[in-house]
Length: 62
Image 1 (cartoon, rainbow, N blue to C red):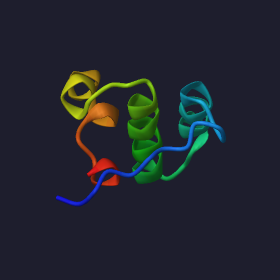
Image 2: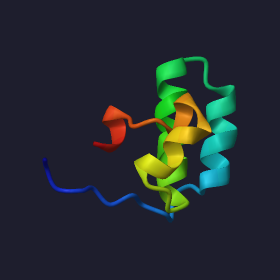
Image 3: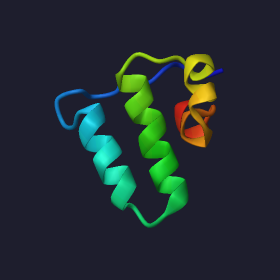
């Protein structure tokens, strides 16, 4: 497994990402945005998985 990537917190908040994801037409993009929002809130992939598809392990975070 590769090295973890740092998520910049100065550009957008998790609330902003969720709001943008709701407007996003591309479902795959919206899912990745929601996964990043979960990561910004400190949720692990295992913790986010019960939240639904948006919180499931995603290639965007692996």
